[in-house]
Amino acid sequence: MPTWHGRCRLIPVKTSPTEWSLHLPLPNGVTGAESLAFDARGQGPYTGVSDGRVLKWGGSSVGWTTFAHHANYRKFPMCTVPVAPSEETESLCGRPLGLAFHRKSGDLYIADAYKGLMRVGPDGGEAEATGDVYFTDSSVTYPRRFNTEIMMNADATGRLLKYDALKKQVTVLKDGLPYPNGVAVSHDRTYVVVAHTVPCQAHRYYLQGPKAGHYELLADLPGYPDNVRRDEKGGYWVALNQEKGRSGVTTAPVKHLVGVRLDGGGVEVEELTAAKGVTLSEVTERKGQLWLGSVELDYIGLVV
Image 1: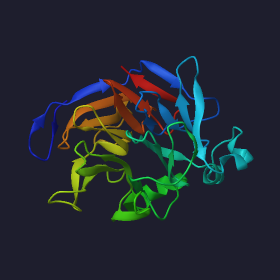
Image 2 (image 1 turned 120 degrees about the vertical axis):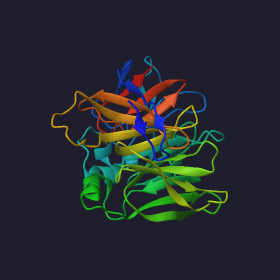
Image 3 (image 1 turned 90 degrees about the vertical axis):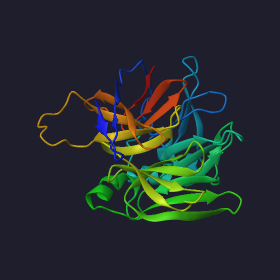
Image 4 (image 1 turned 45 degrees about the horizontal axis):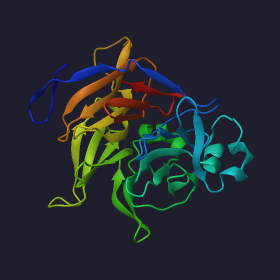
């Protein structure tokens, strides 16, 4: 279906239904593969789950294994037995969300909602806090499990941050942001893309060049975004946790938007749809295939 962009061009948008080629169930008792990552050897996916661990998929013969957790994880019995996640269990066990590998070192960087930014080596184990990474703090007022309050109260205390490994310090690049969520470094590394869950937008912050330090709108989005990832065509995949309501529509659609692909200029060129009730938090493209993660589901999807 064509869509108008701010540059007044009519762009044909490809619509792709997420007819899952594969359901990859998570281990019993855990949910919420919010973010997905593959290492430099092509192994994975790796994902953080609701009990505080980062898991690694080793293929059908191996299944899921524990790859990483924070240093004090095993000191808390509630972390190692299946229990329903709560604010108490998450604050003790951690809740790993964003994941990304450093290609040269092989280290995995983990953005944990409670334990902060952590790093673990290529062989996994206990994660330590360090790294040279761009990340967001969605709110300085509300913890992760009260994310709906961020939206309901129009909270705008979010921040875009950088941890400098050399200086070992965190720098606030931009504050006063409304619900900043996923982050992706651009293909040419001149800026970072930041998805704002509210007000359904993607912005970019310039790291270098004549616009260094400038924060500007990249795209208005047709839903509430979660993570953003570089695609294989010079653009970005943005996962949508929920589609925007449309005026005049009174019945729930059989399918709804769960993700959009933007080109490098922020123009929407592809949409992903899924059955009612399916929500996504990440779309990761690898070798032409789309791996789909969700903070709410108990499996990972694959679209070939």
